[in-house]
Length: 248
Image (cartoon, rainbow, N blue to C red):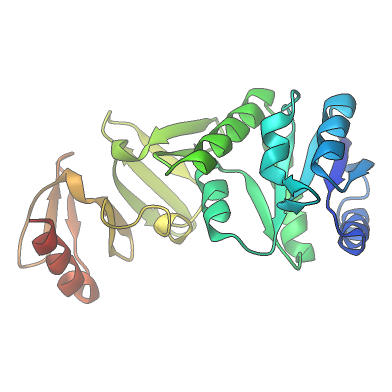
């Protein structure tokens, strides 16, 4: 079993110690804590010198933020898990980039799940891609999203998404180039990322790109430009028709 050399970047000592204890309990044979950092400068130096496999990164640090650390490091081939108590904009950037995050106070079960996800994602190129996309999404309004599958991580422009269809805990993304990408997350995980005016959750099982609509009927059926037909749920009809009226 791989042992992950881990650095904890956190400027509150009590939180850092609590996280260390939780890691020891959740993954004693997986996590090896090799260093702690409390400031931006210290984090940059330790990451570049020690080249960790995993970094837990607080957002607010002494003399800066965790994002400042990402902008200054030279070594970026590591798994990243942010720890945060707030900052919705940042959380959405994490989601778009498929970078993991834990909300404070950290739940032990969520911590364990995050570590288990790391063991599935081993490619160095994947880690670099995630960090690159995160930096992109923090600097501007996100225009693309990373979709993680067992085979690869797909970078998809939002305008390429025609519709999403969910089944249980899986969601399939239908793209303009004909690809279908299935991810092991329910549609609710993406609903707050793919929102009006470009996207609309038209049904419990369907979310569509408004620009990909060819036609729709008062009876509640929407024809998309990939020749699919999507039903409008009874509870969404009024909101959908109002949205389409406003679009016109």
